[in-house]
Image (cartoon, rainbow, N blue to C red; front, side, top):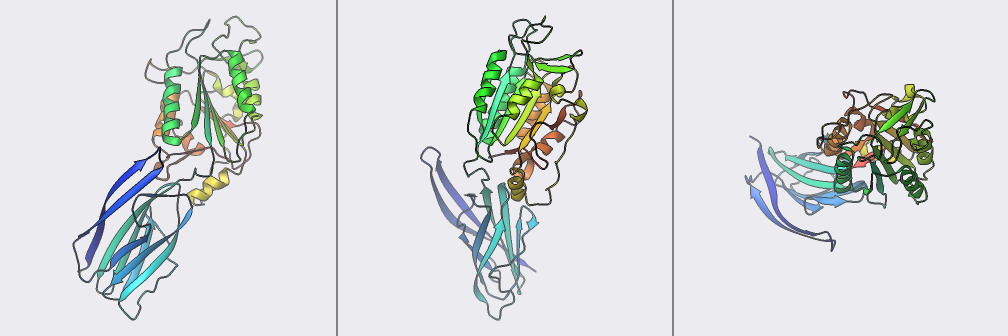
Length: 381
């Protein structure tokens, strides 16, 4: 009968965010002691639940076994890690052996399990949880959020500000975004704020999300769509008091940030695209899924991104019950609160799947200087 030795650690940690200090105390506890089973001692990392700034790390363990080691297996989040370094299976003598193994981490949590067996049938399993902080090189994620509840002439809305505050909180607390929330802006305020962001400096991998929630308008004569600001007028034949989608699109496209994602929760939002028929396009979304997750993210951020997602096409969309979020905002929050799954990375492509069953159907696509293969990512902390 195979005997299993499990080595556990009780870890008491103290973390001070303000002082950037971290202390860890470990107390070994051995369960189900088996005299013929190997014993693993972690050399690096010595403690569990650690963070790494490097994509590839070297794991080191010291193994003691009363008989020859016959099998060494390692898995990372249930994926097999090919063993390659410092392993001498079936050696002539029992005793100690040091094992080193390079492991490619994925963004977020990495649950690494090592299983070692010997010729007596004894085996031992040991684990390490390592968080790979992808966003560690000065890359910034920024969100500019407009929300209009109160209108001078249009009917007031119930949920845009409520929605915007909830989305802002998720982006700040769980994704590390720098956010700015602009409430009930006038047309001039919207354009001035976008111009302000056009004057900022951005790093090569910085990302900018621009979100608008409020009324929208479409002119059947000119075939143009508009965002309604707080001071937009009802009787405005030439829509001079509105922000046209064309102006909004051009202003944003000229912001010197490589990765920009526009979200619009407003009626007729799909007409943000010059050709509505292209609004459902989802080009370039699966080109690199065969890469590791970390490589996928790095490669996506090499290409200029201009993506958009709107709450509908050329139609009215619901505001939702007061205090219950609009349908579009609810799906956005649902996606953010699922954190992209086990890898803790929510991509633009993954985000779109949350909106597929909504009616009216949200529209998505690209605009301006977007390059094939680009993406916008939300990296959960």
